[in-house]
Image (tube, rainbow, N blue to C red):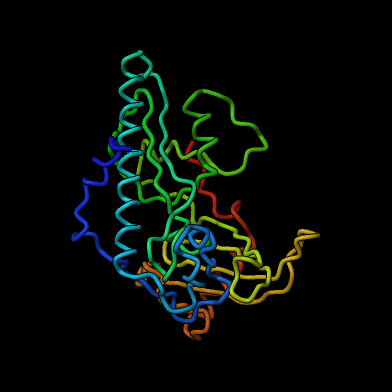
Length: 280
């Protein structure tokens, strides 16, 4: 493992910052947070408890965890560089589509939590970087709303493969050519909160919609035997423009009643109603 030490040495422990939002959102729901059972399975972390309880991880341990995470990301980055270098050596780089993405976000002390498995934006936002042959715009960023499920039709289009009629979501290839193009209105997520992951030992299903301005979540009871949605339990609303770190749940704020009703309708209508207008 000596060769991996250089990635650890890339970071100065004294310069690693603590989480900007180390507390669960004000007005958060007990079942909105995962119990961090993944981290608790490691030796020395059995005591940390649920995120809704006071933080029981020392600053020294937090810095060690973040240091290791940063080092692992740099290691993966180096491996990706090795892969691309080899592709160039064997002559396939110029005619290969490359897409780099993450399957979920990751909390490093944010929301008094570690790991993944919530409907909060920090767990939903992931990187997605694409490079393909004859790409006109390279190194350009788009702020349009996209989802991982968009990758299949996008890669099919770039590869010249017909997209099946049953395919959901939309190719984002037009965004690669016009990054500022008016695009889809919202993205959707769904997360199952199992009894071992909830604070009260009950089972829930959370449905989430992210628009340019708001993040709205509805929670229902869930019957795992029938796979049926139960009664409405509670909701969450976050203003993504003014509260990017989701520190305050606005669902009980009467000033947002109309906003919540509208978002609830959009959530029920689903992804088809959020799709962009045809560009071709």
